[in-house]
Length: 384
Figure (cartoon, rainbow, N blue to C red):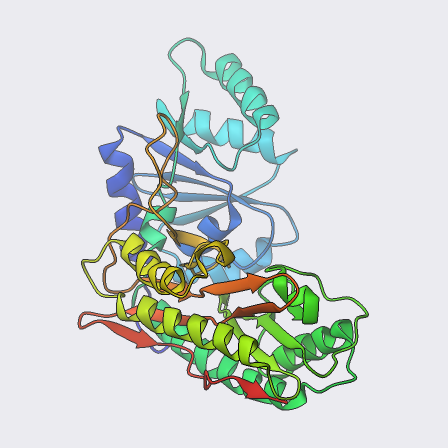
């Protein structure tokens, strides 16, 4: 069903082409499927796009040609379909040569060395000394994707509301006697039943001693009285990923467990309070981390405070501590300044071997005035 808002692709194309022009590029080869989807609306798994100043030349095979002709092309300005003949790479080399482009960017983070070597050799053979020259580029599309447009923001609001409903159902399901793996399977089922295409990552159910491991994999451990249970799950809605974590207690928590939970809850509030337009993203991490350090739990917080969300579960910006400058190494988004339209998670945690762990995570949208909570499931320690 068409989205009620206007087609945003034209604006995305203009932004990408402006970046290309600033870099002196005549064309850009896109092989990263989330970037292809962002610029075209294509939801399949296999395609290459060559963006020029006037066209998006879409290369794919017979599995998707009808979809491109009937669904994608009518909604994507300037798209031209080219069927693979005989292989993707041979078709790409031919299209680049025929385009007349001289400076051709490629996504260095997403093209293998083997493909690059073959393509460079093929272009030299077909184009000669004055033919296309490949230039590695980074973040041409990813940098645009950081700020979500109105269509994306509305998608996130809908996805957040769906995830709230699923989470409420999940929290009513948790009880002593369940195996972690069975509860994880139930969560995945509820995500699909609740309107999501699929889980946005492997669901985490970590109970008792497993809760002290931030990314523990659910196994056949049985939830028992006295356990803290970390539940981290999310879903994909209309291509976009949302993500939420709650920690529950099986039976009344110990005083130490309650103290751990309250410290993490305070840290999350502080992190969200630091979300505002114009703030460096590192301020969010520092606010949350500072609370845990004041509670003597600095060493128990062993990961970043959050991450960007979008067509991928982990996108820019990384909501982590400031990094020392390393020559030639990009700062992974930690130098970004928050602006309206950025969507991030805020998910501090504390993990204590022998006691367990606590993580609380919500998705938020940066607005002109501050922050909008996209997930609103009650955050108090639920006792089951």
